[in-house]
Length: 321
Image (cartoon, rainbow, N blue to C red; front, top):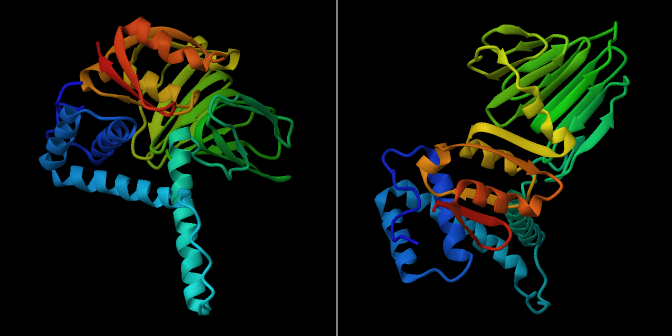
């Protein structure tokens, strides 16, 4: 590995860039036996910007807190504890447990384990809704359900789902996301979301999108990307590509590698870091088999002629060849 920081363009990095870089560095130096050159490169990266040092220190604190849980229990102390001291120790233990659990959940891609409906990484699941409609959840997807005789309301917390909505004279079906809401009387559509944006692709009939800024009707065979502050143009939906996950495939055509990697996080455990921004922007075309998640990175590596380094099964770094 070069003795340069994994991301060469460090000018005015965004906060999410800094977090990403810090995570990659932390995985590198803690995942095995880093070389002296790698340790020196990390030191240079930390010194380059105060935000680098802060982000790396936060990861070290998180790691240290989780490591406490692996230590053997101390010998019993017979001195009596006050109620306040007892509660304080209990809260500290709970905090350490939650911290360690959060670390594992983040690496394994588990985001919303307490949702009404959720799937694990790599899982596909079809669920019947109370009105007879169905929803098919992709991997690492979470959904809340709120149905009554006069209300059909869902909340997509994360991930991707395909909805088959039966007509109901009493109410429309609504699906809320952080980016906005969609409404439909009857039809079929696929909706995916992350923390800030959502993507709608309509297979049958028309779906209405409502954001803080505007209302948009999206017809059959069309797609729309939107956020709380911006609604993109209506485009032709590549439904064969968008819905391929329902038949066990991931299909990418002229897609940035960063988008491909983001999609892979739903289907295989572990985090993947692209170590070069030009590589992240490279346009790629390939087909992956969801039934063989263990082969996904091998296929990706051969198709793109890139170099991959893994640190345990949960961290993979991708470099230009």
